Length: 123
Ligand SMILES: N[C@@H](CCC(=O)N[C@@H](CS)C(=O)NCC(=O)O)C(=O)O
Image (cartoon, rainbow, N blue to C red):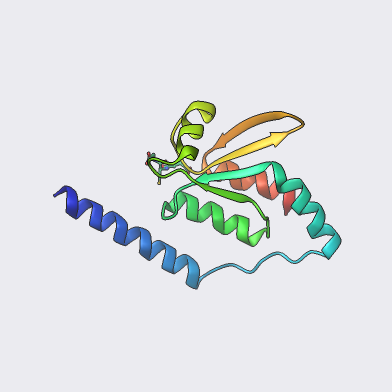
């Protein structure tokens, strides 16, 4: 039974990845100067995520659409990123955006909040 649940979950995850790949949104176009500024501004951002989690796929689609070079960190079991997420972020829940600004770090959970934050800053 446990194996069946795992297989269904893995299968659904891969299906979501495939649909995401087929229906990728277009990237926002910026001038080279504006894109360089965005690259600078996103240096303090990292997305803790799982590869096939639907909320992470939704967040990665927004990142792709907004053309943001944000570092992604896989928080799969056994990963050091999972440990960081638990001890520094406060919970092993993905997606989570780590935001480092002027020496301060904050951890933003909830895909909708992350997407709104990125849209407000970069759309
Ligand atoms: N409402 C949250 C849901 C996030 C969520 O449920 N994430 C799952 C993965 S799909 C999770 O992190 N579960 C904890 C775990 O698998 O350890 C959002 O939109 O970000």
